[in-house]
Structures are given as structure tokens and as C-alpha cells.
Length: 312
Image (cartoon, rainbow, N blue to C red; front, side):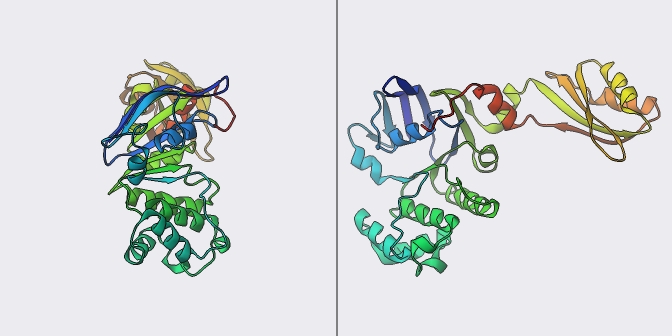
């Protein structure tokens, strides 16, 4: 569906995107994740024909972006971080205008897109009167008015409150059932909750590209086990746990009523059976033993430490 090969883009001496290549299959929700200044927005602008790469090629569907930008734009819907809305227009009038520009019959399509994006109840309002969440919904309606095959969203939940974030996230997942969706973000829970796959960019280069669960397995070097017992103080619990093969570290885990420990276990070591035996042999009562999955946050920090702080 989308194939990018060797994308490179510089602003003066600053290389914003450096030899980036990836393929996105039809029907995927793909998150492009990276710190501020990593090159996410520049990458999206090249995919949507707003910027021309210095080097490299992009093929979307059957069209090369350099040769057929107008054909590419017909199959793409793009929502930039700040939705380009006309605040003095009514929502309905604005969508009529957008549909006319796109050559789309307005009546039936506006009703359909209003239902999908949840904006039918504000069609009669000025865009300037809307909350940030509703403005994002109108921006999504704009991007989808021509029923594109691909939807590209740049920081779609930026500046929203927690309730609005959940609403937009659910909307993206619903849209993703029918379309190929690419969204850029630096908000980690957004990717975990929404995306089938993640591409992590740092300083203009791809440092990881796979499903979230596979990244967690392949890049998570250590396992962590949360343990809570009664009948032991932390010093005794820590000493006993450190005697188990594979245990690298034992840290105190705060709990008002129980003695808790966060146990770090090396690599693929399976320490839980031995922990269970050790606790029982000492007469302690086991209340909780839970292996924690390596978080995307830990992986992100591991791969992107030292990134830029600029907005690119």
C-alpha cells in the first residue's frame, strides 16, 4: 500500500530525516513514534506530498509521489497537528465547502461523515465555538470527506483532555477497521492502545519497526516480578530472593500491610517456581507474585536517549 525507500530531507545543515525506509500494508494502524524533533512530521509531510524529499522514493498504491502527486492526494486524507479550519464558518457550511473542493456530493456524504465522527449535534455551530476535541473531530471529517483509502494523522490527540483523548482514540480504532491509518505521536499509551504496529524514529532514523508485543519481547532484556508476602521483613526477603539463580536485583515495593519487592530477573530466566518454593520453605504467606511486561516506555527510552528537543 505504502512503500518508502531511502527518504532523506534536510533543512540547511540539519538532517531531519536520514535514509528512512519502510512498508505499510493495507488495513494496518501504524504508529510513528519518536521524541520531539525526531523527524515524524517531516516524514508525514513527504508522504502527503507537502514536502519533496531530497533523496528517496515514495510509492502509494500504484502511484509514485514525485510523478503523480495529485493522484496520491486523491487517496489520502491528512490531518496535521493543528487542524486547518475556518473558525468563522458553521461546521456544516465548512464541510460543504470542503466537499465541493474535493468534488464530492455534499448532502449524503456530510450526513455519513458527521455520524462517523460524532459531530452531527454541532453542525449548526460556528467552528470557533467548539471545544478542542470537537475541532479535532471536524478536522477528521475534513480529512475523510472524500472517503480516502489512507488516513494520515499528525499528533491527533495533542492538547486534548483525558476524556477527549479516549474519544478520539476510539474513533481512530473504528476508522482503522476500514482504512489504512498512520498516526504520529510522542504519547506512548496512544500507540499501545491504538496501533497494530510501531515505527520508532530517533534523530531522523528508524531505530525499531515491528508489532508492540514483538518489540517488548525482543528488546526487553530483563523481566520484573512484583512480589508481596507477609511474615518477613524486607531485609530477609531481599536476602532470600538474591540467592535464587537469575535474580539480578531486589528493590523495595511500598505496601502498607505487606512486605513487597520488585525483583529483576536476567534475560529468559524463569525464577517464579523457585520464588514460590523459597517463600513457602520459610513459612511466609504469599499474597501476590506477578510478572510485569516490559513497557513500551522503557523500550522507547532505551532507543531514543539523546534525541533532539526541537520541533521538526
